[in-house]
Image (cartoon, rainbow, N blue to C red; front, side, top):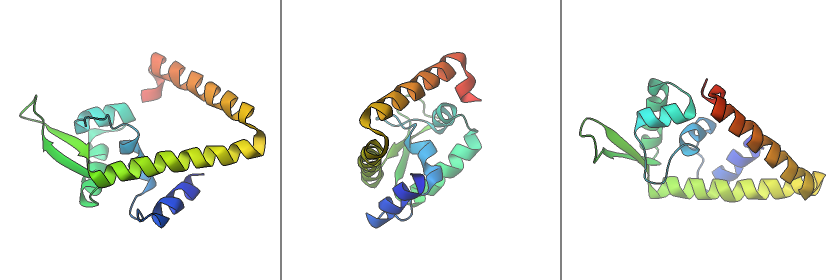
Length: 131
């Protein structure tokens, strides 16, 4: 599904969006975040997250501005183009899920979603999801 998703994004003009960017896009809160907070949410080093943020800023997906609460830090936010990528990804994910439902049935997809959510919650609560 991942290959399909990125091929579809490319057809929509987002041919510079790489799968690695999902670490940022999945963990970006609506109001933006500091790189260190994004890294913690994604379970990766600050340096690795900073590298992705720099690439995404160069691609016009992110903007960096001074943090209004901490003058020593910067806040990373989605640009309008970055928001378009997120919205397109959500739409395409729904299309992909609908397709999978035609293969195995909607009930099994709901069951799978519930199982994955339960696993995610367990990993988050135990701290294992951040290792």
